[in-house]
Length: 374
Ligand SMILES: [Zn+2]
Image (tube, rainbow, N blue to C red; front, side):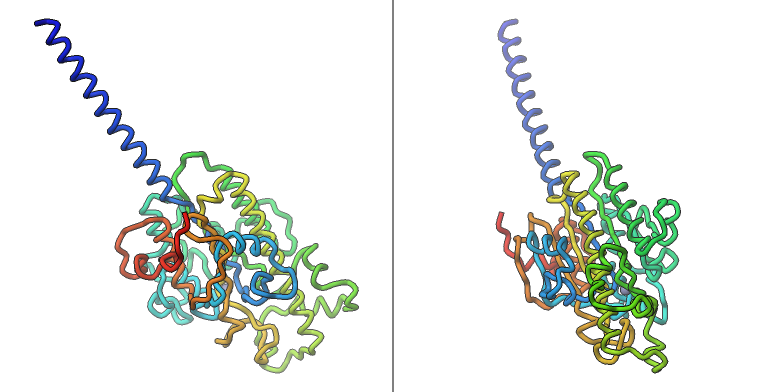
């Protein structure tokens, strides 16, 4: 009798062990799959960058080798458009998936109202660490753009703390330093993260640091220092519009070359960040997006700068997404897309199922229109 009872107990223990093992494995696999479904997100805005000055968009000069590489490894949208011609409303669309008037972020409010549900707020609620590194003061904390971010670094303020020498592009140099340090500090197994970066070097005045200056404003062009310096000191459009600032064809050529130098410098910054993601072994589990908030006039339509203009030059922006798990490499998409499509796309590929009526990831994600190939 004792032997039979012992045998029954042993059988029960074996069954219990098997059940516990199976349940444990199920939880382990489920957790692994759910980790797999939570990629990091790095969203980079090159402020004021028009699409046609990037080499991957067909520009004759090699301005963007790093973004070109991302485009080869991901998807490039040929017809991506900003929702406005200036920083604040366009970033509001990027962060909310809404048009600027719907989000209440216009030149009348000069603010992103807290009533909006932002991308960062949703990601934070879904368990993401959220950090922003911002070079343009139009999207400051004071103007409401820090909603949902654990850390919001206004690079024009933190430059001294970053101990970066004050030279051309100093806020962007500080951004490279701060973003790469932030990535290095992260430990394996930490929560997924959302990193937002705004680079403002392509914005007027155009003063690219070396070697980017000499690569585009070539010494052999024969420009005098005064000519180049005069173009590098133009900070806006008003004098030009009022007829107080006269610009010859030669002046506008120099202005465009300075702009190209800044585009290449922004591309260099992006290269530093993506190389760090690669070095840390996390790039393939990161949704990497490069875009802009609006373009720029460089003499077209009788305009410089980007205000008061709803032309192709100011509204057509780059949009490149690299995330091998959802976007096939080397695709050039010709759908008409806009800044309002980016938030739903991020939520969709991050598998965030929460019903957010203003963003609608299940209906408007760009990833819905591409075929999975894995
Ligand atoms: Zn801007």
